Amino acid sequence: MRAGRVSVVGLGLMGGSLARALAARGVQVVGYDRDADSLAAAVKEGIVHEPLDDTLAGLEQADVVVFATPVGATAKLLTRLAEGRRLEGPSLIMDVASTKRSIVAAAEAAGLGPRYVGAHPLTGSHRSGWGASRASLFDEARVFLCPSATTTTQALRLAESFWRALRAGVEVLGAAEHDEQMAWRSHLPQAVSTALGLTLREADVPRSALGPGGRDVTRLAGGDPDLWTGIMSDNASAILRALAAMEEQLRLFRERLAAGEDGVRGCFADGRDWFDGEPTRTLTPREPAP
Amino acid sequence: MRAGRVSVVGLGLMGGSLARALAARGVQVVGYDRDADSLAAAVKEGIVHEPLDDTLAGLEQADVVVFATPVGATAKLLTRLAEGRRLEGPSLIMDVASTKRSIVAAAEAAGLGPRYVGAHPLTGSHRSGWGASRASLFDEARVFLCPSATTTTQALRLAESFWRALRAGVEVLGAAEHDEQMAWRSHLPQAVSTALGLTLREADVPRSALGPGGRDVTRLAGGDPDLWTGIMSDNASAILRALAAMEEQLRLFRERLAAGEDGVRGCFADGRDWFDGEPTRTLTPREPAP
Image (tube, rainbow over all chains, first blue to last red):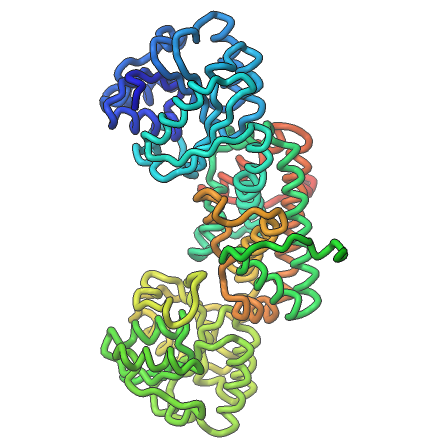
């Protein structure tokens, strides 16, 4: 890694894991967390080399700054820090939020566009906070990089080498396309897992009553409510479409089960084809063949 | 284990694992599978002591007979074998299907009631067949035992000691109550996982595009279509109710997301309370307080 010094704002699951992964590679980590205990723990464990106070003074004395704060809070922070001319030093500024369109737009609006790259590591845990962080979180993970309209080639290359040094795979795509894809690839599975938890809750079925399969399906229901509220609100329009599509598939499944064995067998067969990686059909069953 | 000799019909994930667990404890296993290769492998690996041919002649020369065949096939097999007076020797006859009401009724109708105990090990894998079987499948698993109306105390005690010897926990309950509970605890998570797979398939999102969380939620979509078609058809009325409740929760989630942050935060907070094992409320949000 070229960067000798990296500032990480927010030492939760993502930021804490990032700080650990960087420190393990000899990078000096400047760190901040609004939770004083987490920050003190990060210093005591030798992960954070230089802690910052609530003013974040000193943040800019690093080659790279990474915001690992909720998406809404990050946009406000970027705007405020840019107005105070507090982000002029670093060659690269990134965030690691799960949605990218609004945050990249906020960075652009704040005049940070040329040095800004939105990053989204497709990894995580239903656990959160410094206590859940681990240096290996990004090993073999996929990280999406979303440049702004004005990001320089140099900044984008630096972002790519930053994440590759942490053993992640990198994929560059536009922020709007990223958010549309994530509505299906990440946000819909989260919503479905939570909705199943809510269904079982109403039926008075505790999670401890489930077998290993049911526990897998509901694992994401343990996710952080504030984090997910921010993500879902930021990407609501795409997620609403994905949710409607899921409702339609559940309704079809129910109709086919009510109609008899053959219909429901088709559902399970199609589901397993998908699981096994069979190419999907280009026509949906509801569209007439041309 | 008291039983010195056990017949296992069907050497798939469940039956194969059972045969392995029994053989590991020195029990002589009499075995049958309609797939000649699976049966030959089980003999070659020293798991099946005595293979049976398609007539199942010799099946009855065991203390315990276990049917590990699909629920519909098991009912027919029980009826046919009982008519041929081919199940008179064993002290205990069981099956391991995921639904219990229809199979226990079929055993009762076939005159096997006093020696019959329906068993349902709440364990498994999305993989199936002899190749997926393993001796440890029942370690720490929960096994539901459903006696018929005429099962003797002796047969039920034998069934309990049989499963406890395999390190499983045992819970005795009525077959109808079992099926109603499983609609929520097992069959609904399966249907939801498959429906999510179908939704992503329609959206042209392959499973390889998901992160670790999404892969967990869709793991059950890889389940065996024939097995699950049999289970769902056998317990359709209870599952249809559970599916309708899930659709309602998804619809509420979507409405709340469309309405803004506060509603969707409530969904995630309630979902995490459930995940964390908080007691469920006795009133649903749609019922007015008294």
